[in-house]
Length: 112
Length: 112
Image (cartoon, rainbow over all chains, first blue to last red; front, side, top):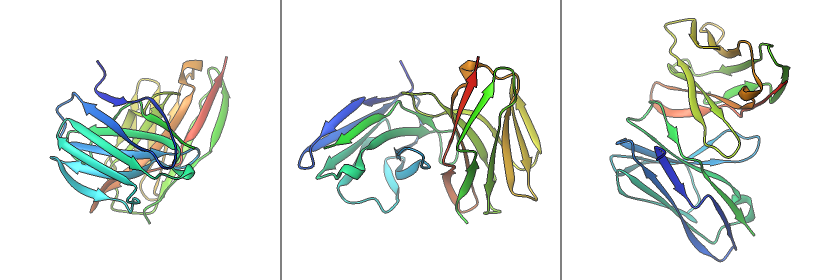
């Protein structure tokens, strides 16, 4: 079983849909992250949770809504997305902030 | 000041050659410089990391060279193999900014 598991692996959604991405980590880490990865661009940190508390929101549009019910699970709720939101969404965790981050395999999202 | 500039964007090297990927930063408070490796369909994985108290760190065939005065660091891959073909990201963090600041990535192809 991998350390950080993301589901689904692929998602196609219309601009009026509502969907959620799920992340689960089995590493006992305290910090969890959502990143957006677009081609030929640096990874964009979206949200940070530390001990289940959101500590960072890097100017992410409100159509992305994170949820962290416990230190092992992280969700990203999506609604009324735009085509430019199509990207690979990566979840990561670390024992503490600023230490090695372990990534999931990502969800490839396509907004049509 | 928060950017990490990575070059080249892509690199093709013959098997056995030594690809070199370079990164430069501005924020002198950065004190943690990791390199991540990402294969297609996978999330990034930590390859090697360095802190500014040393000028070089080796792990297997991978070496980080660090030049504090120039604010640059680079990744060298000795005796490169086709299995090293991947996208490589540098990153930096430190000071009041614990977030990892990422380079844009280098797509490396090792030709057999």
